[in-house]
Image 1 (cartoon, chains in turn green, brown):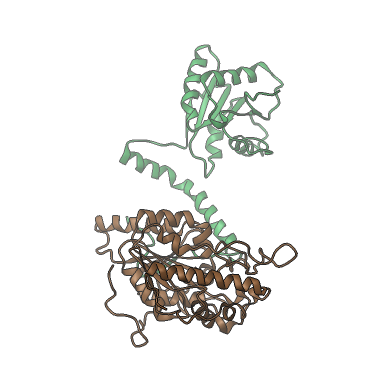
Image 2 (tube, chains in turn yellow, brown; image 1 turned 120 degrees about the vertical axis):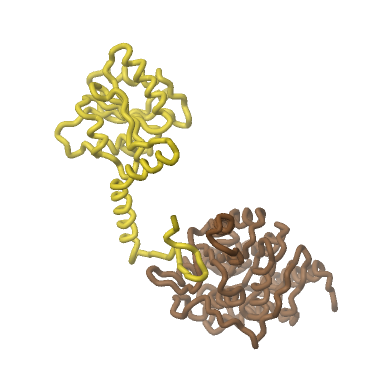
Amino acid sequence: MNPLRMLDPELPRSIGAFGAQNVYTEVKMAQDMALDQSALVWEDVWNEFSEKFGRRYKSLDTCQTEDADTIFITMGSLSETARSAIIEMRETEEKVGFINLRLWRPFPGKILKKAIGNAKKVIVIDRMLSPGSQGGPLGLELRATYCNEIKHPKIWNFIVGLGGRLISRQTLKKIHEDVRGNKHLPEKYYLYDARVK
Amino acid sequence: MIQPEKKITAKNIPDFEPLSSGHRACQGCAEILAQRLVLKAIGKDAIVVSATGCMEVVTTPYPQTAWNMPWLHVAFENASAVASGVIGARSAMVKKQRIKKNSTKVIVMGGDGATADIGFQSLSGALERGHDFVYVCFDNEAYMNTGVQRSSSTPPGAWTTTSPLGEYSDGKQGGKKDMAAIAAAHNIPYVATACPGYPFDLMNKARKAALTPGPAYLHVLAPCPTGWRMDTRFGVRISKLAVDTRVFPLYEIIDGQYVLSKKGKKNKPVEDYLKIQGRFKHLRKESVKTIQENADKRFAELEWLAGSIKN
């Protein structure tokens, strides 16, 4: 595979030119279009990757979501904890499932909606909060995904693990109990486990 | 230390033009002149990595470019780091036999802001790692591109928009960061100061720097008529005056040994240099005297370092 552009004295090119207001909007549009259209190819690229490296990536992983009432959505390293928490919760016949989202941009809204299916409750676990915003990034994205839908699940957004605070299976179980135990728990975001004076 | 085969003189100026005309530098800009001379001397077989600054903005307003050389710009702070990457990538490509030879030189260019302030740590890192590259700092003594804000390379007493004149401020306070000395403190094989007023001196130093294996640092005074508040025709004259008044002495540091360049032994009073620049017009006699003293002191120090005190 040859690079598209090279720093070659025989064929001089300028890379990283100065783009001011006359082109910047167009540059952003091109970036946005390119990222949107990557949705057409990422599956093929990941298949090619798995052939070469033996490791398969998917836009999202699901675990026991088919018949679940409540679905946890997590990202990143939390997923293994969530997976074992779900398996333990299933032992006590609670209908919980879990989705681990890997693809962040372009945001796979349709795929995520399909994976959530008819679940009534969704618990989004975020690990960051932009102060003053209306929730964690994943929570906001999910709400935006359902924004124009008449039928949508209840979405709670829990922000945990800030600064590396421990998230155990117990944490996720407690979150689930809080949601189940309070029918009128407002659908908003919660800084979980925060000490308040 | 490799000596260039032949010195560049008026008779054998290279024909190669690194920059096409029609770029957008201000009238009378000595920085673009210095850049042209440096790259003329180094020649076609080079890759230019540029920091953000005047020269980036005036030469490559998208979709146009003035460059006849491969040119790469990433950000203000990382020109040296980017160059390290370019060098690493090229040596990897030679190993993989994707390119045959690796004689191509990597030239990094930045203004004084990109060198002494924003890109300082990436430059220091690259010098310390010892990559084979030439860093050329075009020192116009303030952030001219964004509208004349002071940098750490602005000389004491100079007016800028952020070191204004008034009740509480009398131009820039504090000194001018001596970047050449800082670069030399990295124990690199070649450091030199130059200015476009003495073009052959500049070109020969640039060529020497490029031929030096390992890192080389070139500090070039680049008078800016816009920011220095002077007539556009004074670009070359003022850079000559900077040398002749010993405000900006020309010297080389070859493997740690200081060598004073031949130019600049005229010893004119600094007033000659200061009085044609609007940015210094507020200076009182005492300030001029201090500047004179500092210039003399630094020059005596350089003479001592070069071990050539001849009176």
